[in-house]
Length: 429
Ligand SMILES: Cc1cc2nc3c(=O)[nH]c(=O)nc-3n(C[C@H](O)[C@H](O)[C@H](O)COP(=O)(O)OP(=O)(O)OC[C@H]3O[C@@H](n4cnc5c(N)ncnc54)[C@H](O)[C@@H]3O)c2cc1C
Image (cartoon, rainbow, N blue to C red; front, top):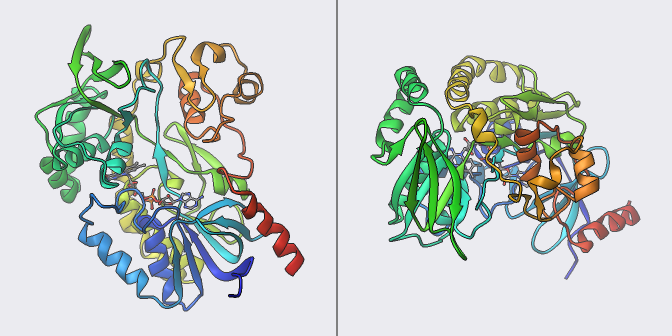
């Protein structure tokens, strides 16, 4: 059998097959360009439309996925990661079998976002996850029927996670929203401008929801057994549970864009890829769409993706036509950010012995007094483990105000054979 080539080429590569990436592929497909979509999940859909044995895929997700699959000039590579950008207009890819080099003319970054995990005493106990992380585990088939679950943190994702857990047979004993009741009420009062969101909020309403409440610590031996929650002015609630899911918001996945030289800008307390009104980044022929450009929800991601897809194949008029509807969802994103912004106390939940870097076992006390991220890395190995600072980098930004530095390749742990693909390609060309 002929071995697969160590490299291939396409007109347009889209990294990420969430709402933004799929919409970009659909919009660009009519141009006839050869398009490759790369995504590291087992099936297209990204975070909100994550597939798995515990999932009934939303009809909108199914329709978009099928529409993209029907395009003969679009190839979707699931289970495939971009691990580096070794040269101009080149990406190094890895799947379960092989590593190879992809050459491109135009690139759209739709790399989405990940959860912001803030350390607190007990956050490394088995049974403690992110709120979206809990959803992902349940969709992946993890049984939770009969379990008592506490969900804490901030934003609409808490309610979505609670709905997923309830559908899977768990009892959600508390949803602790850190934002004050008045913020939640003001947010709800404006939802009428986005009727679909108002209907969604009504459908997701939960009797165990409490505003002005945040996690203090998780206790247990070999697994979480109780959670202490701050509530109101001075009250502490002690709630027995089998799982705790904490979601403090999302952080844009900027690493690949940053590595390619794209400018990043501060947005809502995190860094996001900077784009112009046509979704172009600061690097020629590189566009970005969806939550890597700032947190804003799936509706905004879909519109931005479609704009980027049209712009990338030279359809400027079709892209411009989407600016108006996009502005409406930009306003919704701003509303969420304004009313669910993290209170200062919630950013500082650690005790001196709380691990901040889970990969390298670095406690908070070892980081206090360090000059910044690089100093901390050099002296404590914080951020130098398997996740390469994806979790603790964002946490130290909240805890100490440190700014992360430009990522270095590889973006994630990679097999030696994959790196060897670079040498094979050099020999072939
Ligand atoms: C854990 C989690 C759960 C969420 N659950 C909900 C929910 O229930 N309801 C809701 O309204 N919103 C939810 N959100 C928010 C939701 O993700 C966004 O609104 C929307 O999906 C953003 O779409 P996107 O296309 O920008 O990014 P995403 O949907 O995040 O898609 C980005 C894709 O790019 C892939 N990717 C990133 N980097 C690479 C790389 N180097 N190589 C290969 N692939 C890569 C990712 O794996 C992902 O599949 C969730 C977010 C997270 C983080």
